[in-house]
Length: 333
Image (tube, rainbow, N blue to C red):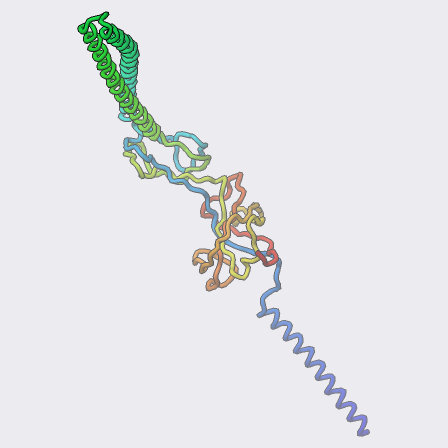
C-alpha cells in the first residue's frame, strides 16, 4: 500500500505541475499579445496635408490704377487668361515717343551714310587727280633738265601735285569724321531701339496673365485700386500638380525609395484611393513637427518626404488632411 500511495502522490504532483505550466503558458501568451508590438504588416502608413504649387501674382514693373479684374476667388482659369489690367495710357505714350525717336535716329543714320559715301567718292577723285598731277610734275622736271621746258613750268607742276596731295589728305580726314559720325548715329539708333523694347516690356506688364491652368485661391485687390510692383493681386493654385507632405520615421526610412508607388486616401472621399509616388526624400533628419502625425513617437527623428499625386478631378485641395500607405521595401540604398 505504501508504494501505491507514493505513486498516487507523484502522479498528483506531476499533474499539478503540468497544469501550472499550461496556465502560465496561456498567461504569457496573453501578456505578450497585450504589451508586445504587433508583427510587421509589410506596409508603411503616413499622414500629412495636401499641398499645391502656388503662384503669387502681381504687377512687377508698373504702378497704375486697376481698370479690369474679371475673376474672383474660386475661378478656374487657363494659361494666358487675362487676370487683371491697369491703366496703360502713360506707358503707351512713352512707347510712341520712343518710336518717334527711333525714326529720328534712323534718319541720322541715313544722313551719315550719305555723308560717308560722298567723302569716299571725293577721296577716290582725289587719288586720280594726285596721280595725274604727280605725272605732270615728273614730266616738267625731265623737260627742265634737258632745257626743253622752263623752270617755271616745273615749279607750277610740282606745286599742283602738292596741292592735290593736300586735298587728298583733307578728304581722307573727312572720311574718318564721316565714319565716326555714322558710328555714333548707329549707336544712338541701337539705344533708341533698345529703349522701345524695354518700354514695350513695361507696357506688356500692364496686363497680368495666368502662368498656368489653375484655380484662384486668393484675390487681394479690387478695381480702382492702385497696383504697383510687389502689390499682390492673386494667388493661383495649380491643382493639376498636388503633393502630400509627410514624414517617415527613422526606423522605416530605409524601406522607402524614390518613385515608389503610394496609395493616398482622405476622410473627405472615404474608400477612394489616389495614386501617387515618392518624388523627394529629405537627406536630413529632423524632429517630427507637432502639426504632423506619424506612426511613431514624436521624440523620434523623421525624414520629410514628398508624394506627388494624380489629381485630374481637382478633388484634392491644399490643406486637406490625407493618409498614405506604401509597401515596406527591403532595407537598402
